[in-house]
Length: 428
Image (cartoon, rainbow, N blue to C red; front, top):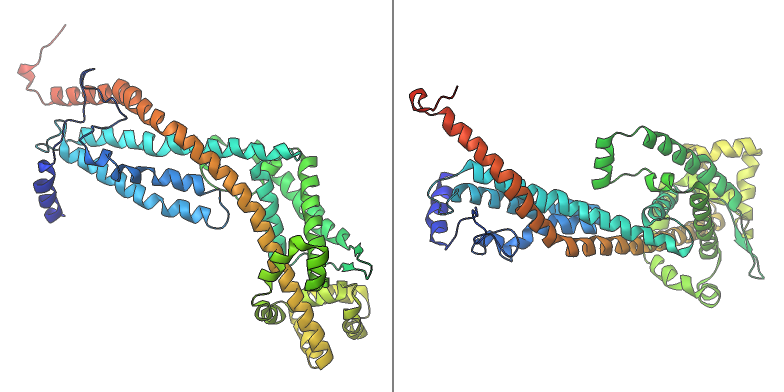
């Protein structure tokens, strides 16, 4: 650290600098906040101060947004630390002759307000405002509420809760078995989650509200605040849409999908890549899901498998226990795989199940990406409009009218405390 300080003190004084602290109107900074001759106030170095705001703006993007937000804090914190240390070393006169803790404190307050708190608040507000436009499609739901729906549907897919059977009949009619899926994911899960969140929001403290505004939560806060009927209608519509698409992808050939459902063809083709490998993992890791798919299937292809299983599990109650017992399900699947004909049926079922699941996960992510782009655009627009005004406001009003006078008062009191008693003026 001592070698760095020596190098710093040798190099930095050679840079042409003028004092940061402005005392008269004539000297007041006309552009934004810092002295034009300050290298840390000029681009490209100045751009590092905005990396955390960029991170806040892209945080609305699904999958990678939150990780990017955390990573983009690194250059911002490095810049803020360098800038505050520079102002400390430069001192009140700006010539590096005498370090000043007061100058460092002043710059730390400025950066905290102008580079962290206020711009991130602007970005988050911009995201929220842009998100409200997502309800203009008649759903009356914000982007946040819709994204909560898609996230929950993704969780349901990952937890393999779309297992209820459904089939496309030879004449092309979709025969759906959606009722049980609806009961499981809406009645048993979504409604209780909304009710629990609403209760918690009523007793939520101010600090928790602030943390949630700037951070992220997995709870359905936006959905809980929205009209419940709108939320349930939207969720059911999206779940039914996904269930029907799953049925088509699991029961139709590529030719049938291309001719009858061309909008699904691209998703189908992408999902077929490595689908056999994923199917083998499904058979190995999730035998209970496969048994559930077999027993719930209305397809004639699974008829023999169903008959084999029901020979041993001859009651509804026994079959309910079976699909909840992974070890027992693994035993049943292993036994079925010993028959070449049954093995072919199971492998085909697993392969089509994985194709459908992968395709629909990508479909849901595509919907989330559109919402993320909408909110990200809102964040960047807010930052673009408010970045300079925020810098101006913090420098001209907060720093000049409050911070600088406060620091001068503290310095005066400190100097007075060190004066000899006989040198002080004593008033009566």
